[in-house]
Picture 1 (cartoon, rainbow, N blue to C red):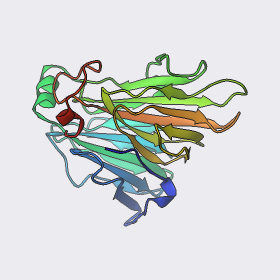
Picture 2: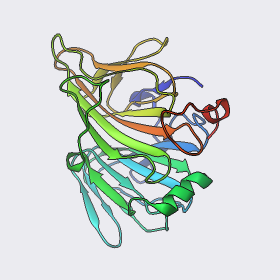
Picture 3: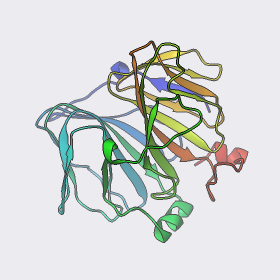
Picture 4: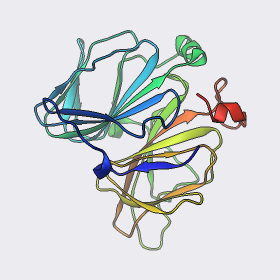
Amino acid sequence: MAFKYIENKDIQRDFKNGISEVEVLPGNFKGHHHYKLNLQAGATYIPAEKYSDKTVIYIFGMGKGYVCTPENSYNINELAFFIADLDGGDYAIHAVTDMDIMRLVVDMNDYDKKIYSECHYRLPFFASVSNCPEYVQDCKGPTTHNWMILPGRNVGRVSLGVCHVFGQEGVDEGTIEKGHTGVHQWNYCIGNSDFKLKVQDNDEITCHGGDWSFIPAGLDHSMIPSAPGKELYYVWFEQYTRKESPIQFIEPTEAELNDY
């Protein structure tokens, strides 16, 4: 399993009625389908399918709009997140300005369904980043801000968070992290991001808003602003490697590392 990366400019859009939905890095990981969803101002997106056995997460990275359900309307004025109901609830996304969105569709295995039935966030779930709790992690820089959006074991074995900082002269900001065998990680760059991503022995690349990457479990990685004043802003999305009992500090089996 290898590090993969696609720049936003290399994602081919296919607009119909102001909507483009294109899978990015298809076949990247079993049980996962990730889509770049772009809406032009005035367009309304209604999903073609709803699921009772898949976690569906929307990351509203750029632009303004709102999500409507039969019960509520949620304004999108900043980085925001929506998790669809597993019971087939209706919803629609309306774009006030052009929007750049990631739509993540993840199969739930028997263990996911079991822990979901025991305890879970009430769905549908909506959150704006400014309303989420901040956390501190030893692999992050001294003024790097981190927000926890979705802890693991709430809608299956996936979790979600945010990292944001501007580069400072002489300060190691951003993320410098040893490989974590407990989780695979995907990253959605947002804002005016201009930061360096280095994964193990791969070449260093420069990330910008809209880019998408995958870091397999176990690979050392760093994400550091390209220069003082440059922005690092990304959403991390993680999947526990263990198919059951997702405790990060238990080494997964080889089969678990290579299978959902």
